[in-house]
Image (cartoon, rainbow, N blue to C red; front, top):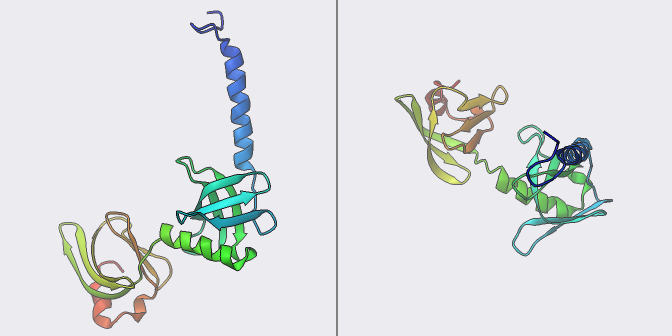
Amino acid sequence: MNGHDNNGIDLLDLQEFDEEALKKESEELLEMRFLNSDNAVFSRTPGGFISLKTKDREYARVGVYLTFPLTNPEEFISIREADEKAKEIGMVEKLSQLPADQQEMLREQIKLRYFMPVITKVLDVKDEYGYAYWNVVTTFGACRFTTQMSGNAVIHLSDSRLLVTDIDGNRYEIPDFYQLGVMERKKLDLFI
């Protein structure tokens, strides 16, 4: 073997080029870049998405992701490219570091991505064949959904705060289990 492929390309040169590109991409991924009102401007696109303009580049559309969605939704917000790779552009350390109108735009995007109705009333929970069938009232109205009885369908976020995930991956929150009525809490005994 002479180090060439069938098309006459020197495989050693190709390997070195790929290594350099990989090294550069790795360095970019490891670099923490904070976005704030000094170096970034977020704006709404005509389609209702968010665009970003930095000193280096403009992004026609970006994705907004929470690093700590349940415990710290106002800090360490990851801003990523909107393609399938979702490469991180930078991090907003604190939402409060941005102008009020830009904070609101990002909060809207966060609410869309992390849609999580709050369960305000538990009408019924039935256990059948390894599944729990829920009939509840949420902040968005009446709702019926199914969870698995085994696994992590109901997670304790604190002594009284619960996160319920249905079989389709939809999440619901019970902010304070003890604020539910006695009969409602009794229906949840299977999970507590």
